Length: 459
Image (cartoon, rainbow, N blue to C red; front, side, top):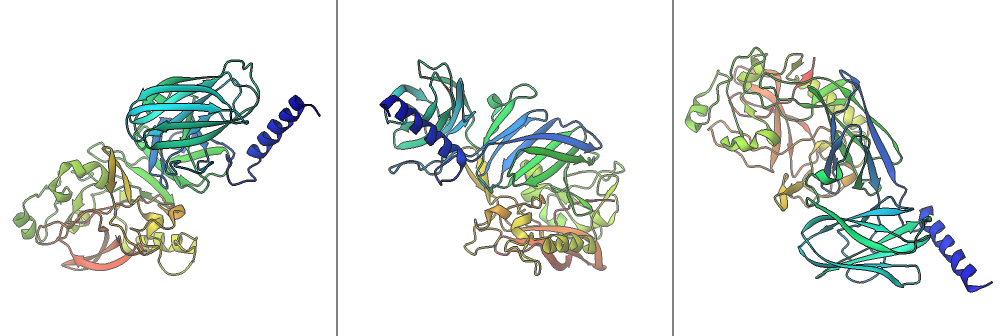
């Protein structure tokens, strides 16, 4: 057998092995997801896709295709960054592939392309800015290739497959820079029908938040193959024109975020009480405030209401209501019996992780803590059982609730929601989650002048 034929067979075998998914240092099959709507609308305007396991997200047009790609790092020994990855679109490639990677610090960066024999066939040295950078690789022939990126102490490696092209002049060219991982990436979002890449590992939990007119629906999934994600649109909006994301759990449709209205659904304003003494004086009057009296908490955490706002009967958007104690229990029992406990059991209440937001999110170049850390596996504040994180789509945040003396708790500790169920003239029932516990459960009853979050359920 001559050397040329022998090398060709090696390349074919390597490509076949790399594409077979039978070794641990390989690409998994790419997954393509498109989107459709039912219910109040069949048109999907936009979709925010959050990888709850990795803490990243991208917002795309509803007509675009999400291209999930699993790219292996750790191919070689050495100082390869195991918390970062290179993605290629497409991979395998033909005429060209788009390479994306996130640079932790700005600086001079060296990129090298090697063929299967280890020969360096293309290089590029360029000063790059911190964040996600995009490059185009073209001009390579059929075979398997390795890409190495170095910038200071940062080093990362990835694999690329070419199934054939005109070749002849391998090159790496700079295309663009976008936001850091976890921030919106507008340069990746093109016209309707384009493919938008997103890094994805098998088993990652994805949360899809769709928008169409006055409707927003949440779906969570762990995709294993290409398919259509369908959103059942149910309008949910208040007198302040806030549009709420909703999620279906069994036969119930819940708000997937906390209520933040300043008006009852007849248009009457709810008294806003910021002063601690004035809040303490409340006993039988409706009131609301922002957590920590800070309006910047409005979007993520919603408002805090005393129970007299709940008892008014008009707090939720028209066609929605504050759930009773039994309705909360029905939701919790469904999740328990259908395997949402962190340990996959179907008895006992261990659904906290399945109902909780991530423990932290990217925030202004760093990470913002959403739940206090816990070292006990299964607790909401732990990093364990990531494949169950918010798989229900309930998306609970730990909010700084308001106690009876007008002071506030702290963010990251507990999430609590009123029910419409009264115990006596001064107390009502609520449900709660704690960072150092593993449940979402009935917490008992407390005084009606406490300020808690509110979730609404469809009539």
